[in-house]
Image (tube, rainbow, N blue to C red):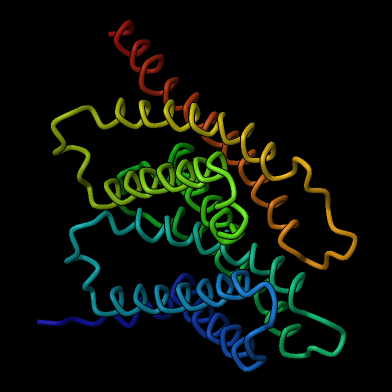
Length: 289
């Protein structure tokens, strides 16, 4: 029998989530009513996707907790809600920067409204992260640790890279195509690690999940090392910034370069921290015993 829990709607986290649904829906409606822009359509599509994704996922979480169906799912619910809240926070802060940069003007009232409300959404999702972290409950622990946070950051930065890629640019050189392959491979494996953790599957795998993650991190660092060199080499060699460039494709090349360096540093931190936890911490624990 289905049991409903009205208390989930009046708890602080429930109130925050309901306001998030309203505000993200408002942002989506304002941006959609303003029409599809002529330029920077990939950035516009990213903003629309983020608002829509956050709105419906938050609504789904509210419904599942209200009907107590969240206790029936075979995943770590607290880890899932924590992962989503952190991802939504990152999405909202990037939208709050990207959307006004590309699409607002002094007479664009709807775009200005969507930008302002996006900052409110960012604040609400940041509050949700804090509330989920403070809420009592059993978690698998991964997504509340530094490696878990880094994995979410790695996948998010990869999404920003994908949003800024232009097929007409990277198809010119095999080296840039290699970089896109690296971005894709690392993104898929990072996302797979997050999904396996949320689904509580690492314990049933026939190999050491922690050591497999370390192996992936080492491989990701090695591959990203090549992209840090190859991407800017091919992107900017004999390709200066055009004299007339108002958010042109050259700026997207700069964004990809910057985000490549960011993700490279994140993967290095992830690798170092994972090695420390698995090998040195466990070794010290064995010596103490």
